[in-house]
Length: 551
Image: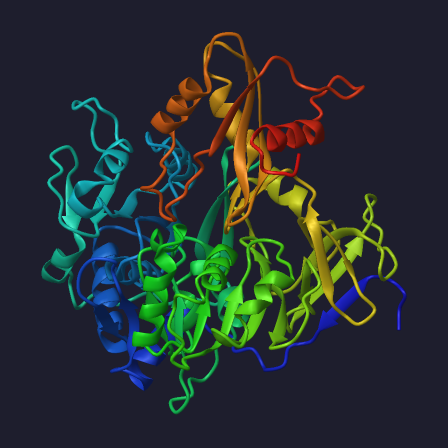
């Protein structure tokens, strides 16, 4: 056995060289009456769609897009909270041969989305104006306010709207307009399928492109077992790779979801648990802060013997505290490790009584290679800490329209390794332990907030001389964003108000957005001998002033 830090778990099942489209059609034939998706809104009745209906409606959307001039491998935008209409739109885009461009808008003026749409040459956008047009101002800001300028994009709304500014089609009206004679195009496994957007270190969005084959193989898509199907619960935004609609649907399983904002407050976990029981969910993807809520509320949640087969969680480093969920709410706890660029990389399975070492995420997923390297890119010995790199067929293909960023994140090896940006080590027993990030990302729940992106917004505020957004500890969310700034006259309330006017907060797709939680004014920042801000001292001082650590 090599003494170098390298692990590889070969695939356990043969991969099928198929597309997402192949599996959508296959499931409609094999399990036509099985509920593909079930929406349990916080307010309102249960809604569902079967595999047969999903395919029929998505095919109609595809035919409409083709008649509208959409070409194979064109990028079609998709924005909005989790709804059944959004699911239909996503599969319709794929069936048309186009690529789904997932949008997660952070700014109230949608400037981040405009940048993505322009770089992607995207001329068609499915978008949700929101309940009672709550998201309409954001959507309308995608177009110029000048009424004499022609509308730049074709809009398909996912629900009815009273917008008088935009010319749009409502998705429910598409069946009346689609030409059923339109033949769907041939789509190939190597074709682009989905683009997941994530903020870059400069605040400009990155677009991770995944192909059909990488997604079908990564999710273990294979012949549907019509006798033993599972019911998945996952309420994460569909535009996140961790919340993707592919997770259950490619296997012919049922995907239960509710409003992503429900779990952001501690009070929501009781409602979520009720939904899990009523839908007889077998496995659930739940973020760490919701698991913490389950453990905290365990005495107030009646124990009637219902147990999930497993709970899967990811998004941040967790410790042994979270194992308390095993035995009380589930039979197994799965710790997942992945990213928008790499997909799933590793997982650790814990049973009742097992002890979790902080940061341990288990062995690589079958089909994934992992190595640990030093700053020069050379492999280190087993047990030595270094930078984590991965290689598999599950990786993204590239960052769209950004060769420089793509070259920076992949090594020059053939085939290349992906630099995850994480620091960790490999154990002699074959497990990965993640120690943290090479960058200064703030891990709020399952969301990564980039300090530089917040700083770039606040540098525009007149009167701020210096600004540095840092992570401070949070019992429930793991970390929170704290804006530290140097200014003579601006109060924290002024800076907070400026952020509130720029960031989408409670109306964001996950109910949190990029909005910082804390704002602190400093007379001056601590500095390193190099003249740069000492971020470590600044973080410690911010946590002390906020009384988030022992004094």
